[in-house]
Length: 468
Image (cartoon, rainbow, N blue to C red; front, side, top):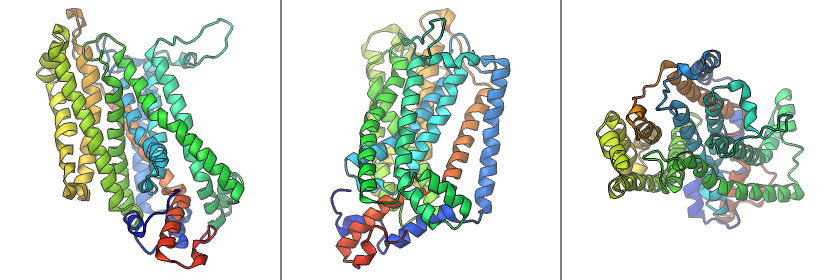
């Protein structure tokens, strides 16, 4: 943060009365405690059990092939691509909160950026499962990378599958680097405060010899800003590339120039919804209400409302295109099939979840009512999944010729893999909350420093080393 916050502005982000020591202790004790909370252990076991469904579903797919899925000749892209796009979208909020809001000097990001970055990495991990499964010939997955070989075979870069592979790998690499660089000062804090020898060695190795010198801080800030600058265009480019999977096809309902901004806004919409779903229980269960304040929740609700309006505008534009184009195939897909056909239930549920219910966030009472905010976030997550279902299934199920007409229904293996990815995501997030700081200690100290200058705290309390 380059500009000092006024006392009133800071108090909206952090509850007054915190010092370097209190913030450091509050956050670090969550990771350094030797006690295992039975509730946390039970949640981990449950999440691991659900993740086992994914492992079983993948094993069955490897043994017997993608014929176990509900895909057919007409709807060749089904649950695999639906869930891939859904998980990629969820990962966008972490990069937006961390990179773009950092560059824009939005200080309210400080309490939520760390676990949002972790959410990004875990979501992209789930998304990466699907292209590897969807290729069918899994033993040749390495062919998707441009590896030198004696046969002179190279990836087909005109294939949307290749675009997804490089988009995911690039996004994953930069997200992990950005997340880890931000963790380094906090890992050093955990190293210095830990009383467990094994934990001290582990945190010491991970902190890369950090000593908090002026040179260390200078290089850290340079690298952090550089990675933020790299991550910012990725928010736009990754989901734009994902939208090209559809927009480059001539399938009715896909061939549209509105898809790139429409997909990017939808990704941020879904990502902030998932951030709220994680933040609300986290602040309650870990007693972080004074660090993740109502100001953070309300700001996330405002971003969700803004991006939701863009997404809803995209829905209306699709309907207008279907009517104004005078294309009988577009009109049939939009009205006869999508709205009032076999999948009409999914379309109108989508409009309710993503278009109608989020409009309640115009009112401050709704934005500051935590149970309602959590409910809206859940509804939006369901709605964004339905959006991908509507785009893919309704467009593919009835195409130009009658021999390309077929209804789609997912199988038990489809549901096992999808529900299993949610269990695996939850398990990874629970482990992260237990062993790493869920809020950036270093950045919270910086807010305390600005608050202290405004409030006139004692000079010894403002030293960067105080409280380690």
